Length: 151
Image 1 (spheres, helix red, strand yellow):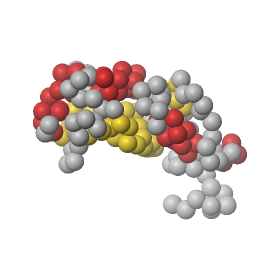
Image 2 (cartoon, rainbow, N blue to C red):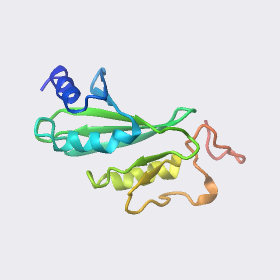
Image 3 (tube, rainbow, N blue to C red):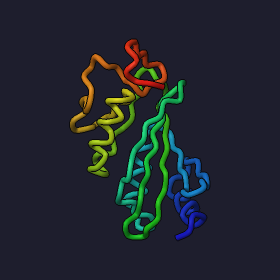
């Protein structure tokens, strides 16, 4: 399926989403409250069947935090990017997609550890690499007094 047809299908499935034709992928942006339902629709709809979560990336936009999900359909061999942003940066929280893709469990823990984004309903949300004394080193407001993390 080409990107234009995929974008049309996604627009009909998730009417409130912002759809953009990226250079390589169709990009779908949804509000953080709609992330889980949009992800479930993309995974379960017979026309899309995004059954494989390739990656999740967390981003600090200074005013809020963002998440980028790369999804693939192993049946149809098409890919999509699903994006969302938190409502702020003081206590960034988003719903976990672990219930949809088991691979999200590790990826969400990594994002929590490095950016401090919390995931509702995550089965084991705890630090992965660092202890709590570190703070969240990939945040733009992270203070590194001893210069371990170079920018």
